[in-house]
Image (spheres, rainbow, N blue to C red):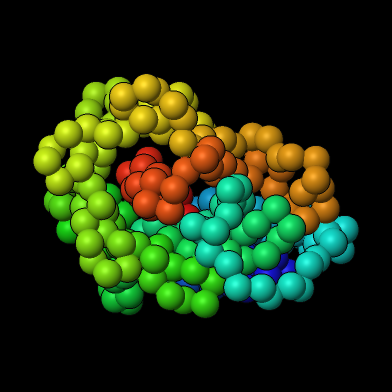
Length: 262
């Protein structure tokens, strides 16, 4: 998936949303006319919220359509993965639960982190209920090969088992009041994460507080100008992290971003 394909997919979603709201408006208008026995004015007022949502979706589509022509696309399809890069630009695809996709600074698709569950019933279940159930997320490269798996127990604050592609357990993530930590097989805390605010967090070694990764939203490096539409696109930066440490970092993404509105 290139950035061009990603934005084309998002635009199709906005058009689909608009049509869905339009059909819902027509259906609700007819129902209200029947219930109110022909009071068209009140029936029209009743569907205004749906029409507003339709217009918002059309507006997002229009903005993407206008700005899309200004983007400079790189259609390169080189093999890479989230573990090969030191900086990843994050986008979210519509999904009942977390579905992150990663791009490199030059616009190449690097892989994804998403829920293994694909049941269509998930789309009609409340998101809060889905996050209370046991779940498993997979980290994959841009060819679909699994790099890591994150098994989450019950509840929003359940422990997360971090496994590599061979199902070797690297560590266990546990959330506390202000600080989240990852322990090794002996229960010794090795890494700590701190949520600075809703759009930023950092992860460091417990022993010497040396940072291994930082997540920020609200700024874009100058060299990415023209490649992404969203100036507030989240950026995940690794700082001298090994492959296993990068796998550990993504467990923080699973926890901190799992309630992301998709």
